[in-house]
Image (cartoon, rainbow, N blue to C red; front, side, top):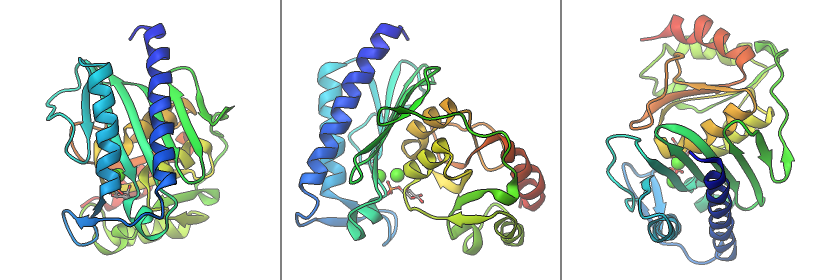
Length: 269
Ligand code: IPD
Ligand code: CA
Ligand code: CA
């Protein structure tokens, strides 16, 4: 992707992300229409749909040759990542949005021929924007994020993971996950994959591991984590395929191999 065009695209996408966030903030206490999707805890609201529609309408008008991969149905049915693809989760952390009115994010990744060029994760209520361009570093608002420490060891790490690893685990023996949780210093569950990626990029969490995430949950996060020296693979160290769901481990590289070799591979079902 031509770098001048990428700068323009970054600025345009940033403006739309901030505008969408402001709309959500202004309407945060408006009555919500809440529906369920795959199961009774898989929530979607009119705000999710309206926010995705806002991006879709703007992208189609301004960049008619770009593609969209997104959660709520306004995107394209893609079988490849050729060309420029916007990968959008209009609200990541809808359960938090509904119940807590905070701790949710807008996540927008822009890929060109399969390569992540631009990422935005906007913590809407905190008004904190994580952003990155490939090879140009990652930012938290206007502050550049430092490179992740290579001195980390697993005993002093904080790991993000959710209860599915312990109670509905299709991938790894639960006992191994229990050992991993006992080994690390602490574990956290924030309920927004995008914000958990942003926390890994910022180095306030050393890894985030989850069983089943869609492309829009992780596309922006991958770009941002890459820029602070982190690595993202599936939970067994294999490459992510952004055209399908994946297990995910995004991590400080100093602890990634240990998590995979000493725990995930050992307990793999
Ligand atoms: C969800 C959140 C959550 C993760 C789920 C995702 P949504 O996204 O990122 O933290 O555990 O797997 O589906 O549905 O709120 O956009
Ligand atoms: Ca999501
Ligand atoms: Ca969502």
